[in-house]
Image (tube, rainbow, N blue to C red; front, side, top):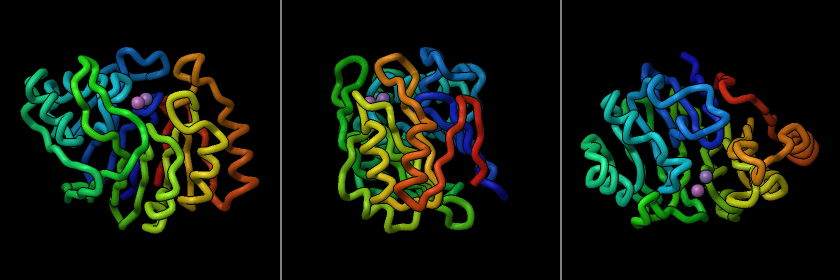
Length: 229
Ligand code: NI
Ligand code: MN
């Protein structure tokens, strides 16, 4: 069975594997690049990396409609329960892992902030290290600066890394290229760019730099595009 990833634009992804549909950082209704709206996404699980509105976005309405389990940090899980009435939540914290029907989910470090849309504390921002069918590991850095311990995450052996390249709020192209050198994934795909003018980037130029300076295979897709792992 293949693992299929669909980019929903910005930092939003749909992962289909082992009969589960996992939506990561759903930001659809307010996302100018997303080919999907919150009302037409099916999900069994929702992963939320941090509290910013472009990541926690449509988690609550999708959770209410589908009954999907929301997996996120403890503070965001409690916020979703208290302010949005989302009962099916699992709160974690950095470095923690959990077995899921589709594989294993680990919350990794991310250097960023995590205030929730109403100003509540959103705990520590995170990335996700997923171990899926066949033991394949996919690392979503989510919103973060470059940090040297990405090397340690990469030591697990990463089949696909998903890295932000937008700059301004996250790593820009040069730091994301250095992240590829630290992580050494087999393949890498950029996200969190071109959603709005302040994070406009040329993904093809970035891919060329990755090809030139690392052993990873860069993949550039359009919102709505798919990657099979
Ligand atoms: Ni953010
Ligand atoms: Mn963001």
